[in-house]
Image (cartoon, rainbow, N blue to C red; front, side):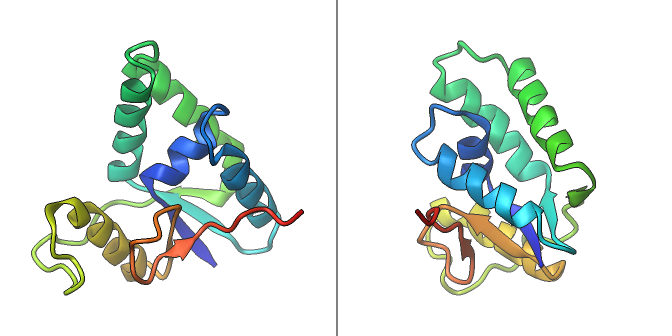
Length: 137
């Protein structure tokens, strides 16, 4: 199975003070140990990670530091990570996408689907996406 990590998954995984950090970190660790699993990122989630990381820190995290943290995260995935070039046009979006705030989610879902992957997210409002589960006790 292949997963395209969305922005909220990356932000939660990247910062230990995030409310869902343990949830995402546990899922990534467990999933990474499975044979044949790949984690994809693309420009949109990577840029989103940098932007949100700077915003949530009120400027205490610079874009350069956020990029460095992201690089370390991707290196931790080793050969399980693959950068996915965004080769899906934004000219058509699914019918469920009715608001401006849904366009990026819809596009990333289309990108994941086009590359036989699931969009891994914490967002319950993306039909067809893979919701990262809560850790089992």
